[in-house]
Each structure stands twice: as C-alpha cells, then as structure tokens.
Image (cartoon, rainbow, N blue to C red; front, side):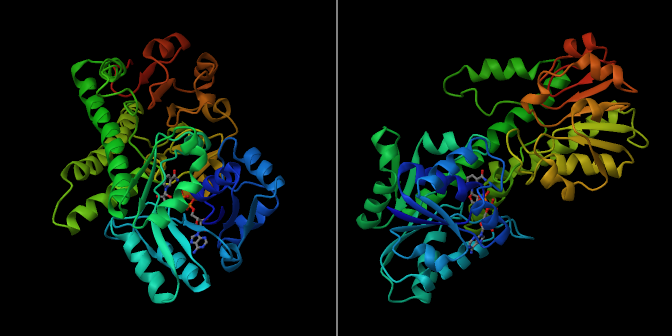
Amino acid sequence: MKIAMIGTGYVGLVSGVCFSDFGHDIVCVDKDPRKIEMLERGEVPIFEPGLDRLMAKNVEAGRLTFTRDLKAAIAGADAVFIAVGTPTRRGDGHADLTYVMAAAEEIAKAADHYMVIVTKSTVPVGTNRKVAEVVRAANPDLDFDVASNPEFLREGAAIDDFMKPDRVVVGVQTDRAAKVMEEIYRPLYLRDFPIVTTDLESAEMIKYAANAFLATKITFINEIAALCEKVGADVKMVSKGMGMDGRIGNKFLHAGPGYGGSCFPKDTKALARIGQEHGQPMQITEAVIKVNEEVKRRMIDKLRDLCGGSFNGKTVAVLGVTFKPNTDDMRDAPSLTIVPALVGGGARVRVTDPQGRHEGEALLPGVTWEPDPYAATAHADLLVILTEWNEFRALDLARIANGMSTRRMADLRNIYSAEDAAEAGFDAYDSIGRQGHG
Ligand code: NAD
C-alpha cells in the first residue's frame, strides 16, 4: 500500500514509521520546514524511545521518506492519513479543527484519483462527515471515501502500543474504504490483534469516551487520595486492594499531582463541549475537569505548607517537568501550574529533567536548569518530585539530604516512603494520599 501521512508529530511520525515497518510505502508530510529538514538528516524531532532506530531501518529499506510537498506525497496514494494537532480552541473548550480542515482542503486540491482520506487526529463526532464536505466542495469530481481511525498510543511507549495495540478502531461508510483499511492493518490482523470496524460516529466517540474514562479513573483515585490523607489511610494500599478486582483493574489508579499531557486535558474539555452542544451535558467529565484543577491547587498548598507557609526566599528543587516519564512533551503538564506558583510566590526554583529542558525553557521562565538531581538540590530548602522518571526512582537520598539547607521532600508521585525519607535524614516528607512526617 502507498500511504501519505500528514503531520509528523508524536502520532503522525510514529504511525508513519510503524506503517513503513509493516512493509507499506510511506511518505510523511509536514508544514514545519525544521521538522522535515531534521527528518531528512535522519534526526527525530521528538523524544520517543526506539523511534530513531526503527525510522533509520525503514528509511534505509527505501520505504519511508519525508517531504513538505503534499501534492507529491499523495500522488498514487491508496490512503492519506490526517494526523495534525487538534488543540483546545481558545475560549470555549472545543477542539480546534482548523488544521484538520486545512489539511483536508489541501488533499482535495492535490488529489486526482480514488483514495481513502483517514482522520487519525482526535476529532469531535461529526468531523469526518465535515471532512467529506470540505473535500467535495474543493474537488467535486474526486472519487474518495473518508475513514475515522483514532489513535490510542501512549507517548513513551508509542511503538509498542502501535505494533501491539489492544485494538484498532476503524470507522467507515463503504466496503471499498473498509477493504483499504483492512489491507493497511493486515499485519496486525494476521497476528490476531482485534480490529473494531464501526460507523464514523461511533469510531469518533470511542476515542473521546476512552480518554474521558481514563481521566476519570485517575481523578477518582486522586480524590480518594485526598480523603486518605484526612482519615489516615494509605492510597497506595487502597489502589492495590481496589485494582486486584478484575472489574476495576490496576491501571490508571496511581495517585499523583493531576493528569496532564497532550490528550486528557483537551479531550475531556472537548467531550464536555460536545455534550453541551447536543443538550446532553457530560456531568461526570465536567466534574473530572474541575476536580483535576483542584488536585493541582492542592499540590501547591502542600508545597507551601512544607515551606512553612510561604515560598518567599526559599530555594526549591523540582525533579521532572514533562507530563510523564519517557517523553519530552510538556503540553498541559502539571509542572506548568506548579512551577509558576513557586516562582510567583518568590521561590528560587532549580529544575532538572532528562528530556524536558528543550521544550521547558520557554515555558518555565525564571527557573534555573540543572544537569541532575544532586546539582538541583544542593543548598535547596525543598525537594519536589513531579515526574517519576526512572532516573529519580533510585536516588541516593542521604547524599541529597546532606546537600540541602533544609531537608524537606514533597514526593508527588509516591515513589519513596516516609521511612525511606526519615532514614536518609529528611526532616519532613509529604506525598499523595499517605501520612507524611515532620
Ligand atoms: P503534534 O502537534 O505533535 O503534531 C502535529 C503536526 O502536524 C505538527 O508537526 C504540525 O506541523 C503538522 N501539521 C499541521 N498542519 C499541517 C498541514 N496542513 N500539513 C502538514 N503538516 C501539518 O500533534 P500530536 O501529538 O501528534 O497529535 C496529533 C493528533 O493525534 C491530535 O488530534 C491528538 O489529539 C491525537 N493523539 C495524540 C496522542 C499523543 O499521545 N500525542 C495520542 C493519541 C491521539
């Protein structure tokens, strides 16, 4: 199959590379000249474990190329995937479809043969039909189908998620489009990974419902964690005991500083907006959005308490700024709420992150970047663990405590315990949903 992939972000690039590894011929297109230049030099513009090697292998095999020229990319293509961003539209929480519709129009103007136009971006219910209208208006003679193929990969584990998915969802209107999509995903189908074929609207809805459900699960345990702190329970034990119930499952039950990232915040807001527009308010999702904001605010209160009531004049070391480990993605990361509160409160903030500096420098003004946790915590008054990178899971806590001016730790990912902290010489330790000390 010959496929064009529009957008070489986290989803487009991973999908393009993985499809080429299936044996398809892939041309990846992006408007951003910097990205295409990097890709042509064999450099990966994002941090995603394993992507550089898989990309090099498929470029070498002649199955994967990069260009800014959309018309050339779709010449002879069986399918063209739209994998551009759908950020939150300013003001109303709706998904901004400008990039999707612009890509649809460009495809329509350049296309001259039958192809399936597949939306991989996360888009509100009804968007694929609108894509079809835009294409029809721009090129009335074009023979085409649209298909919805939402993506479920997680940054940091994207290749494995794409190659070994729990399921692939495909929404189509015609058998002809279904056959093309079947052919594209044949390598997964042959290895017994389930393909769920639906109508367009159900496919679009599956993606939002799945993300809102996961955001709800995280927020539920975060709220339980807050109550655990009040009643003397330990949320780690509570999660463990709950998660062993097969009906509940143990995933997405880790209490933390609130969900963030490029998907959950914008997709929950978009779902709430879709509900409002259809006179069917998504009350649970709306509550989740509100509670998640409160979770982040509670984190700031926790840190202020550990600093004795004020950040003013304190030196705070922050470990981790990306929204989760194994990615350089900073979009809607909890650090973007918490760090400015520290800086705004008068703290000197020293930050370290294995991959976050490149994106983070512009987003977190007024902080000092340090090469590692030991440099960041030297003479600090408070250590804050914000992202659970593996590098932060086995720190020499005694060495850290020794170097600090005041030995206090806020472990917002529950990767240590009050006992670990006390043994290492910390005078105060607080975490999420557990009893601290000091
Ligand atoms: P991204 O911002 O990393 O990448 C989007 C890319 O599209 C950019 O490189 C941009 O330059 C390019 N682009 C925009 N308009 C273009 C055009 N007309 N022609 C060519 N290139 C164009 O976005 P992302 O994180 O990859 O997300 C893409 C979509 O996938 C979103 O809808 C998102 O919700 C969804 N999604 C993301 C994830 C994730 O983990 N990031 C997971 C599942 C689904």
